[in-house]
Image (tube, rainbow, N blue to C red; front, side, top):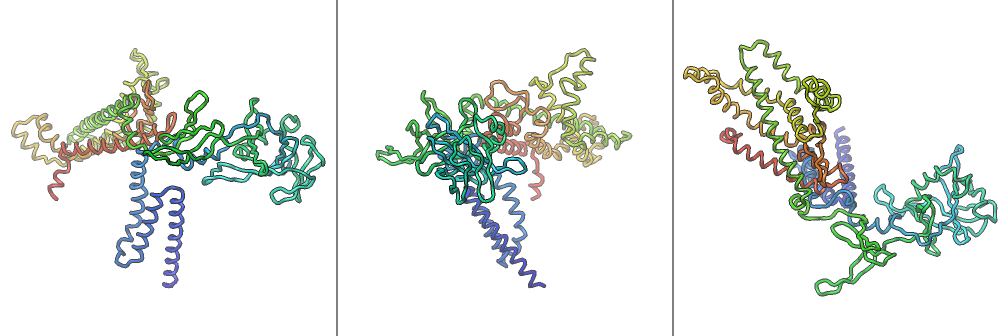
Length: 578
């Protein structure tokens, strides 16, 4: 039994090695070099821990090491790496992928002959409905060619970049196509009167032809074939080299034309360091001009000399994302306003919630107060309600500008005009502070109550004998001793509020928007919600710029927290004990 178990464990280890090895090679082949290398390195370490008896204790750290890498180290590395690139909308490919698209994507073709090619589509029917099994007959210069379902020629992963179909000239009633024998009926024929095309076990019937009223009613099926196959397809005549591609004509209808690829690779002699070198470039086959490659983007030049953006790729841009925050006024202005509001929002929230929580804690700490447990339970309720329910209740039930209780009942009752809570920058900030104070004061009350319980009664008795009043006892005994306990919690609350994305996003979504900003910044946006908008919302995603700001947020929070720890003396007692 033990031997069987050992064999099973060795088999599992070998299987995991095979899976990890294949996955690591797959990642490296798809340009995920860092992830692939780290995965293979982790595989070697895991094998070493398991196979080496001296490394026996380390095998229990393997799960922790894997999760540490996946959830902490790799996201940090990826964020830092992205911050120094232009990765984002229009720049999501690698350079090789961008060049592939220019060379193979059927969108980068142009029409050689303006006269469209006459064509007719035939399909196998199933239950009286056309299927995807189709043939197309083309009439080119009074000769007839046939093409079948185009096959993928260039693809990356599951995305098919280019399909290609071979054109076969029909010279007889019976002909071969892709290794199969077909028969066209009737014969001789013209493209208008073909009834069907048959093979050994299938019959292809006409389903679509332009300017044929009986067949144009099947435009829906033609559109399906276009979207699924033909829009990425080139039909090639191997003898003449002619390429047929589908394009939208001036009348808005899909038609086939003889096309040519717009870009191809070429070599160009350039002067560099006093020497002539040969460089691989991409040229426009129509204008014979070399396209421009600059800062991770390819540009073409139109007839008026204007640059036309073609495709971009992710490229290293150095500190450009960081300097952009300072040098671009339309970016730096909103950024510093967001940063200033984030500081104010964090400080005021901690101040208000701590003041309110401490006030309630002082009241509840009075032993003469009857029903303290009831009051304490009631005051903790805001903390117990799910966060998003509370925020949405405040947003829709209280502050809604149309049917909220304030604008609809209370303010009119007091003779006041309704307030634009979400469209006025000042009031939007007021409601952010109000709601967050409401949601966080129970936490401050709880920690303050705990800290107050730890202050010895003897101190108050001695001070009372010395004639100290309530204010002096609070200011010279309660507050210093309380602060020594809650200071680290206040600092952590500040850091949490600094990144409290949930409340801002649910309550105001960062609005109202700042006028004139080129980035999607709002008056109540804090840095983390601003980063989210840059990365996932707005006119386009700017992952590189968002990552640069995320790094700045890390240093800001770390610096402010370190300064607060130093000024407040938090953890000094712990360090002293060590």
